[in-house]
Length: 267
Image 1 (cartoon, rainbow, N blue to C red):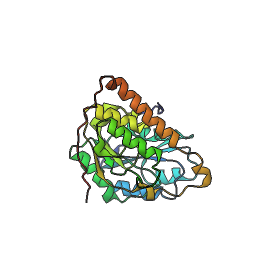
Image 2 (image 1 turned 90 degrees about the horizontal axis):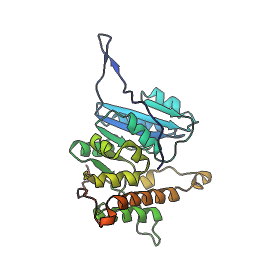
Image 3 (image 1 turned 120 degrees about the vertical axis):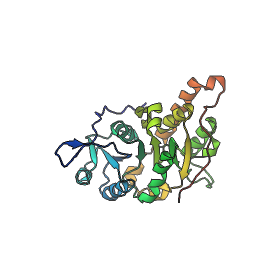
Image 4 (image 1 turned 30 degrees about the horizontal axis):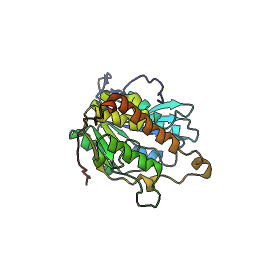
């Protein structure tokens, strides 16, 4: 498992009229891993702050050299800085460890998604869902379906949740409750399929709540960027999740006791 570095949890404080620090725990923590996303970061943070009146934004800058740090600091976000890249998805685990909100929303710094759409995910958590997924399964009508899409469908079927189709914690946006974080552990968020497997094993409520087409929102990558395919990593993550499940329940042929829930698109 990819292990996130240790983070000291230190929630932001606010100074009241009497000069003493008056701190109120945020309702929503928005976690944004950042690596050279200065083109979109400012707009992403602005939308994040519009989700809820009591929102904290946590930017996890790792290996960023393009000026994103100045943008994050100027926005008022809480900024965690790492000189080197942490690895795919590890920034989510780092941000979750530092978060103080009852609801944690995970988004990417290169996708500007309106707050009204993001609010669908946090609202689902407020109504009792433990993990609110993007109802995105990727393109499935091509002659050859991508291996990552197949892996997502296969894992969900194995876990007794074929209704989730290809929805996964691999894709943003998604939100989790504080209860879910406690059940699966922040470290597991560095391996999203494992995190969802643990959530279903714990009997948490996992739903797909709204379709956000991240396939079209992803910015075009340069040839050099595309050369480092994440496919082997993501497939490996799914295999790790399957291995964990087999050790936990698979020997008895049992599916995890996760709650079955339908799809509920927001407005």
